[in-house]
Amino acid sequence: MQLDLRYPIGLMFGIIGLLLIGYGLLGDQSVYAVSLGVNVNLWAGLGMTAFGGLMLGGGWLSARRTSPTERP
Amino acid sequence: MHLQGIDYAIIGVYFVFVLGIGAALKRFMKTSLDFFESGRSLAAWITGLAFLSANLGAQEVIGMAASGAKYGIMTSHFYWVGAIPAMIFVGVFMMPFYYGSRAHSVPEYLRLRFDEKTRALNAVSFAVMTLFSSGISMYVMGLLFQLLLGWDINVSIFVSAIVVLVYILLGGLTSSIYNEVLQFFLIVFGFLPLVFIGLMHAGGWSGLQSRLSTVATNAGFAPGAWTQSWQHMGSPAANPMGVEWFGMAMGLGFVLSFGYWCTDFLVIQRAMAAKSMNAARRTPLLAAIPKMFFPFIVILPGMIAIALLPSSSFVVNGKLDYNMAMPLMLEKFYPPGLLGLGLTALVASFMSGMAGNVTAFNTVWTYDIYKAYLHKNAGDADYMRMGRMATVFGTLASVATAYVAMQFGNIMDLLQLVFSFINAPLFATFLLGMFWARATANGAFWGLLSGTTAAGIHYFLTGVGAAATTKLHGYPSDMAQNFWGAIWAWSACFVVTIVVSLVTKPRAAAELKGLVYSLTPKITEEGVAWYRRPVLLAIIVGALTIALNIYFW
Image (cartoon, rainbow over all chains, first blue to last red; front, side, top):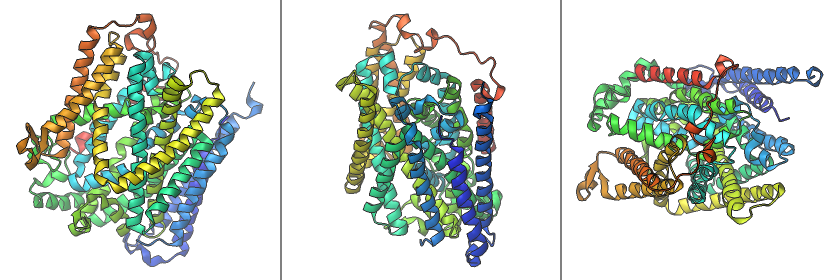
């Protein structure tokens, strides 16, 4: 019995990812001169949100597999 | 450097989760086994990433970028020649003894294998080292954020100390480990975009290569000196690091890195928290996989920095300081948003560096000093209470050493030097202890002392560059002196341990079962899926690392 680390990791990166996606879409677009015009916040945010989702998914699947109804 | 709201928001989210994880783990901290050893229940991927991250302080992130700027891709030797072979060795050969002996700590293994005085020597020197390392982490972080963002150094030190203190008090080792895993992912997401952006500006790897060949020839070296890791190691004069391949391979690759990765309780503690012997053995091997790719995240930004930025950028207070490489890259190439993420990754590294040291300290204090010498048969609740008190004391002592570092900057360099004197011989002691049944306690004790003394004597008898005219022997660079000092220290310990062991009485073979290779039944890997077999993983990791060495030859 332990806290499954995948939940906090998934949640944190999901939240930060969404923040970056939001800022990337709605924020000042001129700041991307440093990245040669590429909206790196949006891309990084998408990547992190996807990663967060994977972690949360993994944690949920794992919890289902070891649910009390399946134990002998 | 100025931060926007989005940057503060990201840092804020991180702090909420760090404390939240600690709070969520509190109800699982019922016994001292939970608090100090995570109940020996963690999965290998978690202990593996923590094993890697516990070592990965911000000093490494900043220091490796600085070395990347100063020495080029040769810096990768710290990873591909230094860390990886040692991690493979400890996982395959040494973990069975650490985990199988059921010792609570590395010093306790020494007591089981040798005797009390060897344990005491290791425990006390290690405890002191962790407090100073923690304090130095705090000081360097405070200094960096004062320089970059104008944050008051005292506030940085106290806020980080309080946060670390709270989450360790609440969740023990598990809290520290979970936050280290968080730190790992933050570093990857926080710095990988920098590499992409930097390479875009530099014109890809080939563009970087041609820019760095200009850097190399301007510094008086062959064009490939910054982008080829082995070719220019025939003589110290041919490369910017000032070392030749033998001194580097033996000094760094063997003595220093094996001495650290195989004996330092800070990292070993993470492997000992694993849920089974198989998971414990796989821990360093799983850690080695991301580790071997880390040069691309931490060293490459430094190389890009020196290729793209004018050399005047690296001058701080009139002196050349390559430590500015990573912060400069963040400032110049990250928009708001990612900037906050990069800074959060730095904060996370500093804080988990502190937390790792504090958890190692509270365990060694409680088991190897308090329980061993002060209060032998107290109940479990007493040890837990002592562990929490040691956490408070350890954090306060770290803050104190941070202020000492602030007053006496040079003392810190001296202390780090002294610690390298202590670490260098350790691996000889463990090697002989684990693989030679005839090694005795007196041999180990006197070997350790001789090794450390040899390191000290070597340091005083030799010099670097121009300062060497009055000394017995001169080295072309600080690194060369460091590597060769380690070789001498290790050799002294090795020889003295053997000689003293041969003239002192060994313990009966029955007492050493499970502690020495020849007296322990071999672990079989039958019935284990192929991707969970340590030996196979070790071979894969080794082959990949050799391939990387060849590619960047």
